[in-house]
Image 1 (cartoon, helix red, strand yellow):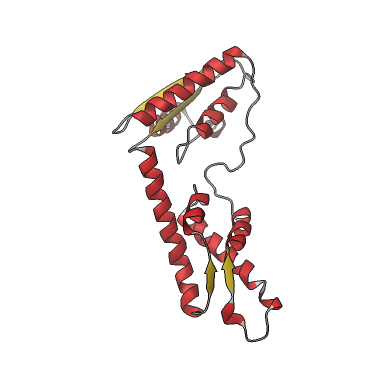
Image 2 (cartoon, rainbow, N blue to C red; image 1 turned 30 degrees about the vertical axis):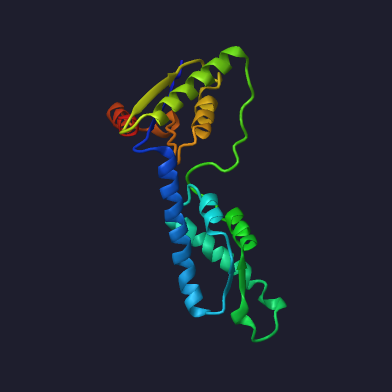
Length: 199
């Protein structure tokens, strides 16, 4: 029997926190574009900052900087189709950023979840119960902590279910702890690792 333990900690209302995160990412995007605009005053930007900020969920500041650099390179690649000396009229579009977002993948989070296959009424009941706990966390204020223990034999889908609940929770950041990452640690270090995540 190998248990899986999942938990989440929310410090404020999820919707307002997502909004703040989106504003910060938009500021990062504009700050990384600013030096390019200073070098090329005639640079044309055909961008939707709000959409870009929403699409860069789970991206760190360094990753967003890399996205901007890749988008800039994509725009520069079209300079060969322009007339000589027309370099100052480069246009950076949403298409350039879509290409950059396909190239630069965030280290945290997941972008294309494959989902799970339903395994009957018991599976639906466990999933529904777990999602009710997620709803309970979202509805609280302060720093609530809800812990759920999934127990079952190897290969019964505990990890897949925990990952699915984490993805469907809508939380900005979900941390996943696996026993495989603690194989070489002694019992004290394992306890400390678990404590850092759940307490």
